[in-house]
Amino acid sequence: MIDAESKSISHNHTFGEDTDDSNAMSAMLSHLSQKACKRLREAGVAARTLTLTIRYAGFETRTGSKTLAEPVRLDADIFAVFQGLFRRHRDTKRKVRLLGVSLSGLTHGGEQLDLLDAERRAKQQKLTSAADHLRDRFGFGKLQFGGSLRRDELGHDGEDS
Image 1 (cartoon, one colour):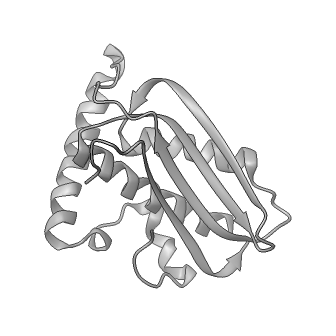
Image 2 (cartoon, rainbow, N blue to C red; image 1 turned 90 degrees about the horizontal axis):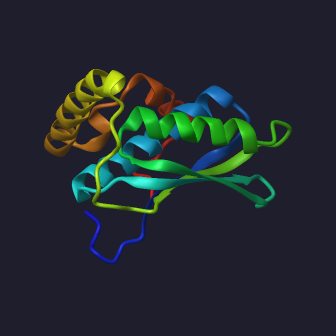
């Protein structure tokens, strides 16, 4: 849960070994996005600014941000933005040590709904609500969406920060 003073929600993961496996990094990015989105929903807020952090083996850090016209809170919407930021800012010639996601520009206002997209969003909200309930009951790591399954191959050793 975030308190009233919180200005952002973030999660990051330091890999056990530096990696250049794009699929594995995408899986970890999915996992980190899901964790951050769950905290958004628990706090009853949505985010407008998404920031990706990539730290390389030599400890050089690269960040990329995107500020959206409307606040978002659904996993799929947020993950899509992070995927785009990852493709845009990653140096494919270097191994990655750490990935981090941050959601800021938090607001209690809801997302703007496109009427054509309302049915898809309603289904997605039901799915994420059910997933949140199961994760609360059995632990976050007990339920994973397909995009984050490969993270265990990366030497995942407990909870991310």
